[in-house]
Image (cartoon, rainbow, N blue to C red; front, side, top):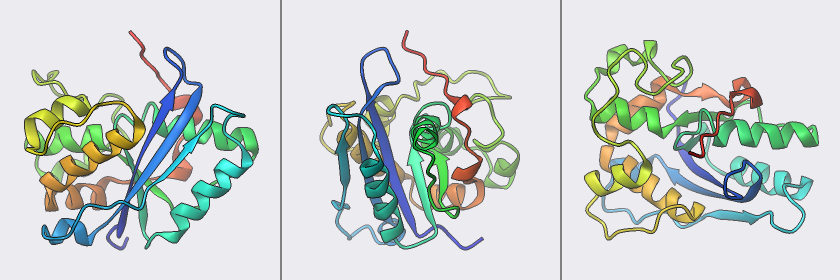
Length: 209
């Protein structure tokens, strides 16, 4: 497969303690941003609010159009996406009886950063990618360090603090961490992405404790 050309960071906002969606934000980052540190951060974001009417056909059309405007291959990146954001999006699409383009990919940044920051060998990643692991550290001891997005950001990024959890802010943090990882991030996602078509809404495993 050709190298991924656009990474679209995605984060859903939900009502507290539920998986009822209230907002989604998408932030596309072209591959060239990882190869040239002098380039400015991306700002061409799409944010949709669902508080009045929920996720609708218009919501789908906006997301589908936005993704297809990006240079392909396109990979959606979300933190804990495997068990939260990706199945939530799939659930909403299935409810409307629609789907994204079959060439859209996805990757979970929780798995990416764990593999990179724990210094796992890229050559072994094909056996331990987010498409086959049930838990991001599956097969290894639970890490001592926290892998929440905010905690990774505090450890790895020297930018000013960002308030966590508004979807737009989470995407900014996720992008900045990925850029700090640089070409290691590119190598991981090129090798261990998965087809969004393969995501099941039944993978949703929200933990609100």
